[in-house]
Each structure stands twice: as C-alpha cells, then as structure tokens.
Length: 411
Image (cartoon, rainbow, N blue to C red):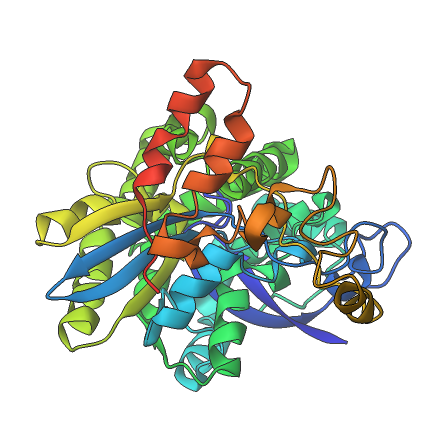
C-alpha cells in the first residue's frame, strides 16, 4: 500500500516546511501501526472537534482574515477542527497554506529525482550507512527514498519518528484543513513554492545541506527528536502561545551556529514573504484563513506582529492554555430522545441541556462553552471556557486566561 506522507522539518518538529512523497511502509510486528490502523485502537476514534492550536483574527479595510498556527503532524482525533476554528474557516473565502501538497505542480517538483552525482557526493560511506539504519528502524523498505534529495530523505524519516506516540503526518493539521476546504469547494492558495522550500532546507550549498543531514541523523539516533515533537504537539494542543513563544528555551535545538542559521532561514527569513501573500489575498477582497506552521506566529518577526505593522488590527482568539480546557462539543442526542422531550412539555431530556454534572458545553440555555462564537453577541470562544475552567480556582489562574478573552469571532 502506497501512503502519501507529509514531511515536517526535523529540528522544528513539523511547524515549518511541508513536502510530500510516496513510499511503501513495511508491515512488521515491530513497526508502528499505519495511520488508518491507529484509529482502531481504543480511545482514538474520531470525535467532535475541540479547539486546538493558536488563532488570531486580523482586520483591515472592513474585512476579516485569520492567522492559524498549525502542526504538520497530528493525532486521529484532531482531524475535525474545533468550533472556533471551523467557524473562522467557514467565514473565510480562501484557505492559504505554505504548500498545497495535492497541487500537481508541487507534487511533480517534489517527485523529481535528485542529481545522481549529488547523491553520490553527499550520501556515501558512514553517512549513507547511518541513513540506511534509520530507514530500517522507521520500517521504510530499502531504496524507497534513495532517489530523493538528501535533505528530503532525512526529513521524511523525521516525519515518521513520532508515530510511536500516535502522531502521524497523514493527520497533519494543514492536511485536515485542506480536506475540509475541498469538501466545501473553498479555494486553496499556496503561499510558497516547493522550490523555495527546498532552497530553505538545503541552505543553497552542498556543505550546508550535508551539515543539516548530519544534524538530523544525530537527532534521530539520540531519540531527542521524538521527544521534541511530542512536547511541541502537547504545547500546540493546549493552545499555549506563551510556552510556544519560549520554544528556543526548551527545544534544545537552537544552540549551535548551524542551528541558529537554520532557524533564521526557516522562520525570520520566510515570514515577510508569507505576510506579503496574506496581505495580497486580503487586499484583493478575500477573507483569508492563513494556516502555517505555529512557529511562524512567535517573536518580533512572527506573523501577528508583521500584520499589525502593516495596518491590520490583530486580535488573539485562541492563545491561552487556561482558556482552552473546555469539553468537546456535546454529542447529538439519541433519536429516541425527541419524543420524550415533547411528552414532557419540551423539558430537556436527561443527557441534554439540563443533565446534572454535564460538561460546560451543555450549560443552561443550550449555550456551548466551547462553541462560544455562536453565542449571543458573538462573544469570544475563549471567554466562556475561561470562566468555567477557573470557577473556584485561584485568582491568578483566572487572570492567566484573560488574554484569550479579547478574541471575537464574527457571525
């Protein structure tokens, strides 16, 4: 079976560049289950969406667009966007991604074989043996990656390392959003090209590419990369923008001069071009839902800051871990519940709005704590969960939720 994989950059654990490749994965008892097979495990079935990630609303010229920080790997139960994210996507005219992995031109560019002489120079001797060992440990059959650009080979393996923790490229947030957009016939625009991203990864020289390949192999062999991806995924899932902004302090991946150069290329050097693309789409009269790697949102060169400098009003919507602890959307009532509700004069059936001990999403009046954007007055999704989550808690915790309460989602 040939699976289309999305490949996150090794050191940034899936928050920046995205590439695609097709390769068969070996079936073996010691190998992690495939993405589809992982859904069969208890507790991993698809559920109603819960808001995750970091989201800002940006406004200029009477129009609204959105900045959404994503993760290029994900879990099976993250496939459905939460109510706040889904509402923002629905309100937008266009979905803007770093790359559209299903675009024909992108697929052709990424499938183009590398120069054989380059492969011979960069992948020989001990480096080639190290790469083969990592491919074997990832259950990738020998030779499946051998024609790809060297940096893409290690990037592909990096995208597979977190499968043991239930994180799969196939469930990447960008891909899930793209599927949702296509299902609703919403246009998808790529903010970059495959050639541009490949140049960023290689650094424009063989020496730089070789250095990055060696660094990626070090991360894979030590097991450190797997821990980095899991930690980043947990931070992203909590919408913890504050910890995300301190990424360089805890990732243990921006210490050497080579790592610092890579970080600058992947983030600061690319962000102005991403901001240009978002601004052009917005200025053309479109409401844009711009979904790019979450690390593009942080720091003085992050997209929220750059868009504010371009005259946009920028409002945080999902940025606070304390505020994003609400329960999933309440499930639809069983079909048999409707007659009982009518027979009792329209009173709520047990398990619906009036159920004792029900989650905040089934509060009095049918107002959903998690689905706050649909509430009267368009109050922010973060406000209701923050109140519910901090009831009876120390005042400090309540104050911690305040930043997210500023965000509003328009009807």
